[in-house]
Image (cartoon, rainbow, N blue to C red; front, side):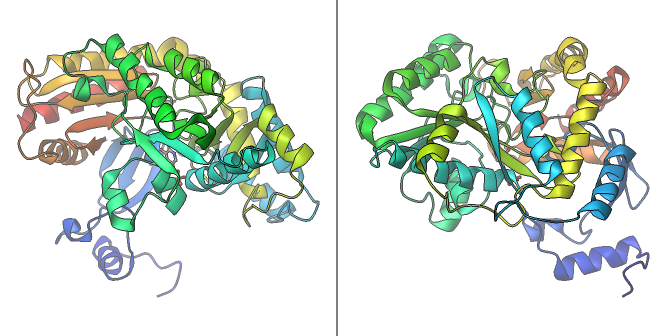
Length: 452
Ligand code: PLP
C-alpha cells in the first residue's frame, strides 16, 4: 500500500478492523458496518467518507476550541518545523516557542501562578502532578504527606497515575487500580445523588466529605485534593454554588494543596480563561492540555503556583522528571498561535457575553421533552439527563441503553454528542454560531422524539 493511495471506505474499514486498536472501544460494537471514517473538517463540521456532514457538538474530545480548518495553525506548525522541528529542553537549553508559551500562559493564569512544566498530554500532566506534590511535601520536611484525595467518577487521564487519580470504577477494575496513596470521596452530583437535600445543602455535604476524609487519614498524611472545576467526562457535573467555597475553606484549614484539573475547562470553555477563575479558586497546580493547542497537536502542561515552584527550585536540586516531548517546539508554536487566535478574535469574551448565554438558554428548552429530567450547563458545556419518569427521576432499567440510542440517532442525523450512561453531553467549539446552536438543539430534540 502506497502511503498517498486513496482507499475506499470499505477498504479503510477492513484495515481498521484488522489492525487498529481503538482507545476506549468495545471492538465488537463496531459490528459489520465497521468504524465511521472521518475524513475532513471545517469550522464546527465534520465530514465522513460517505459525504455526511456532522455538527461536532463535542469539539473532538472537548478540545477543538477555535474550530477546524484554521490555516494559521497549520502555517505556524510548518514554519516551526523548518526552523527547529525538535529539541528538548533538558541539558540547560530552552527554545523560543516553549519560553514564549510558558510566559504567555503564566500571564493568563491566576496571578500567583507563574511557571509552567510542559507535558505531552493531560494524562502526563496528572502524572507530573503526582510527582510534584509528593516532591513538594518532601522538600517541606513533611514526607508523610503523600495521599491525594480525588472524587468518585472523576476523570484525570488514562495512564496508571491518571486513571488512579480518576475515580472511574470500570477503569480501576481493569488494572488493579488505584495505585496506593490515592483515595476517592463523593462527587457533587446533586441530580443523581442529592437525595432529599436541596442543591446547596448537598453541595456542603459533598464538600464536607473532604474534611471527613482528611480527619480520617490525618492531615499530616494528605498531600493534595484534585478536582475539575466542572467534571466533564463524568457527565458535565456542575457543583452547587455552596461546594467550592466550602472546599476552599477546608483546604485552607488543613494546609493541603489544591490541584485544579483544567484539561477541559481551561482555555475559554467556561467563558473565563480557566475554570479556576470562573469559580474564584487559587490552585497550587493546574494540569492543562486539549484547548491549549485546540487539539491541533498533542500538548499538555502543569501551571505551578509560586509557593510550589519556589520550593522545588530553591530546595529541590534536580527534579528527576520530564518527557522527551516536554515543550515540543512545534506544539508550542501551534499553542502560541492558538492563544493569539483566542485573544485577537475575543473568543473567550464572546463565550462569556454571547455564546454561553445563547447555548444555555437554548438547551434549557430541551428540559420540556418528556425523556429529559434535567438540563444543566456552564459556559460551552452542557448535559441532558434522560429519565424514564421526570417527576420521580426514575432511571431507565437498562442503564446507558437510552443514552447510547440517542447518541447514535444524533450521529445518524448529523450531530455528535457523547453519552455518559443516560446523560447526553456537549462541548461544542467555542466558535459555534447562534444559528448552529439552533441546529444542535433542533437535531437533539428530533432525536429525543425518535428515541421516545
Ligand atoms: N483530565 C481531564 C479533566 C480530562 O478530561 C482528560 C481527558 O479527557 C485528561 C485529564 C487526560 O487528558 P489526555 O487524554 O490528553 O491524556
